[in-house]
Amino acid sequence: MFSAIEPADLSPLQALDLSLWPLDRSVQVFIKRDDLLFDARAPYFCGNKWRKLKYNLLAARKQGHTTLLTFGGAYSNHILATADAGQLFGFSTIGIVRGEEHVPLNFTLRNAQKRGMFLHYLDRTTYRKKNTTEILQRLEAEFGPCYVIPEGGTNALAMQGCAKLGPEIEGQFGESPKYIALSCGTGGTMAGLLSGLEMEQTKVIGFSALKGDFLQQEVQDLLAENQRQTKASWQINTDYHFGGYAKFKPELIDFIRRFKMVYDIALDPVYTGKLFYGVFDLIGKGSFPNGSRIVVVHSGGLQGIRGFEERRGKMW
Image (tube, rainbow, N blue to C red; front, top):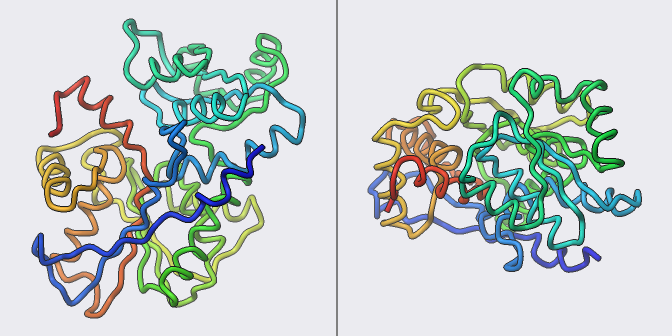
């Protein structure tokens, strides 16, 4: 059933011409184009969501489940990716959405519903208890047996999918890059990447899309809970969240627009825009040693642009 996934698992690695910005050309920047990791029949099942969901889909089918149930906010990349994957591979899907229903539905929820997802809303107080036995049993009583995927898709099987990132990058390079940078929300993609790295000389930098310094501990906990270790050094940078999750400032939007114009690569304002802004800003400040080769993981999530535009107007 999932054999068609395998050939597409390797996303391209693309060099950026920093002279077009311009930036200090004593370093090199490459993009791991996971935004191009998708099936044309399900374009929102892409990027790190492809990696996180792949082994969960296989497990759901192996266990005989026909319905996927997951959680997310009203603009969740994960909600729409799960709906898309479910439609592609023949699962019914249920999305447990944080907060009250707002009509008309936004782009994310409208398209999830078009893909057959049943939307069920939980008030914010109840939603905070979504992982408790009480709430999970209540949902099972209402919807029947389901394969439950956590918010953001982060679990042991998601880490298994993301663990392939490191070997892919090393194989495409032929050697280890000095730095790998990626955006962090739940910490699952970073924990998975770290668990698959064999490169002791590589430093991984996660750029938090959320305000606060809790993600360092989240990543450590995910590694420990799943009995995984890493040889790489790593850190979470919390200087480029622009006020918190889904918050932004004009300079971030200007950067995203300019990046699209210069490189013809779209970034979203929630995750990847903040990541690339942070990397480019640190390069401009001379934070990377001369000769450094930096791989920046573009994790997809571009449907978030549409939600932003519904609220704030066109980005370009």
